[in-house]
Image 1 (cartoon, rainbow, N blue to C red):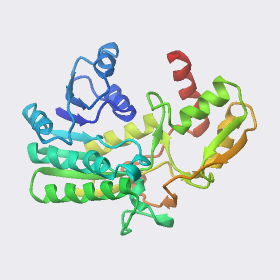
Image 2: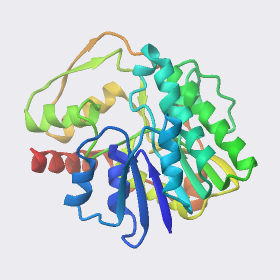
Image 3: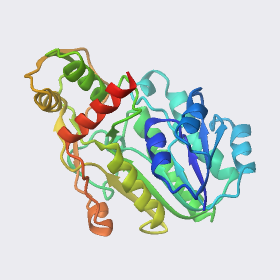
Length: 306
């Protein structure tokens, strides 16, 4: 199989590449991570071809098309910082939506798995599922929802045989950016031994992330057997906690009781939880790694990398 992994240099992409079969021929695009080719070399991923491309640029998407044809695609390229979309909505639109459109204008795929976001449910409270009709206002969520609709358009046109938009509620683990809360928690509690932790906002936003190995396993299940010609699925741990609860549980995992302070505001208000059972019912998928185990695995990785 010849596979395109678009936006492969992010932490989810790196973990995906490490888990894919070595006999696959993979083209992996990256925008600006200068260490990505070295990552491929040191991890002995010789079957992966790194292609530097800003997919929001039509000419770069054309270069990706020239590297084909491809049988399948996992599309991860995106704005990785939802809060940034408030100040730079144009850039967010280019990275989250135009990138997908540009690639689909230059490539065709038998299967495409697109990483959307649970953020599309922005504004909802309580239970949500793909049967809801989202009307988000956060620019990041707006552009992700628009990309889903463009994907359906291109599937209707025959550019994609089977497509699935994955409304992803997040993951944590090795290679995640240092700004991510899970890495901050591990560094603060396990590596520094400090009790104090500052939360931006009021700490009431819900988090429903899973350990990255579970997320990668779910994406591979969808890649191997998309549920329909076009489908939307939620991918979450199914055990949402508030940010305050997460901080407390992380502290206790490392044997201390956190002292929490709150400051500032955040642009997102996350008060929804998914009830979509597609992953469990169709694929028998449930996350295998619990929070405490996941935090300890991340700690092991950070300790070895330091």
